[in-house]
Length: 361
Image 1 (tube, rainbow, N blue to C red):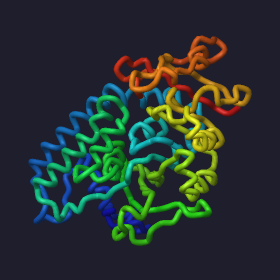
Image 2: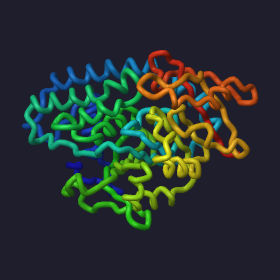
Image 3: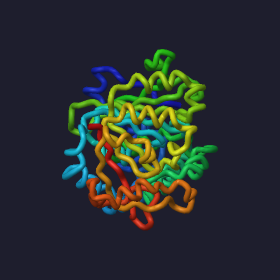
């Protein structure tokens, strides 16, 4: 189930929401349970908290801290960083989106992983709760090691009763990035592209809604932000079958865009609609070579900064996806070139990452 809504002006200003308490519990940052007589011992939760915190410390040192320093010292000066962020093929990866775009007021994620449900903790035994917590940590193993979710692993992890959908991962990421969750809503897009909010999110079956929206703010700050995740197929066929989603995307204002570890899907003609939408909506697009191919950008209307080093796709993907024109651009002094002081994407093992920042003139 979705946790019961708590969103009203008095609640968000004066009372910590149940969403935030659960987020801290799942993320290993604060022990919480709704009912004293049911739950898990603090000692066992402490063991879980140490496990997830040890894993988090590793990515903090090796990846997140260098990313934050780079964003603060350099990246935010190159874009209008207060614009909203559109993240296609995102999965539940709020962690890296926020680290690179911390000043966005709104985040919109599009991915084909089910939202799922939060468990009813009050009906779970201590053994079931401990198992669930450690399944959350296991779900994040590819983020810890590689910086991206492996689709086949994610589909296995959210199957059965391990972790039902990606919803709890958003709770963890929001908590671990020092945010307070104020409210969570079940939503869907409508024929005219507007958003319908279910009035009683706690009681609707999770196969009836296709979106979830978080209201949150940085701990100690006033500004309330939004994170919206849509469970959707954004192939051309998928958007034909879901015209409401297409209408919603077409109605978006200009935003920044982010694409990473996207399986080269926008290289194929079957993903031309979302490719064209990103080209239209993104004032600035930060992506690796798995995003929109270099050939689709109008070189007379955009400027480019090329980061890192171009290499052909890893062995999981066809060498036919190698972009010779992008490879040549990395050797062309007419383009601006910059180092990339962190590893984020498929070449995590060699750290020979490539990213592009494409900005409209």
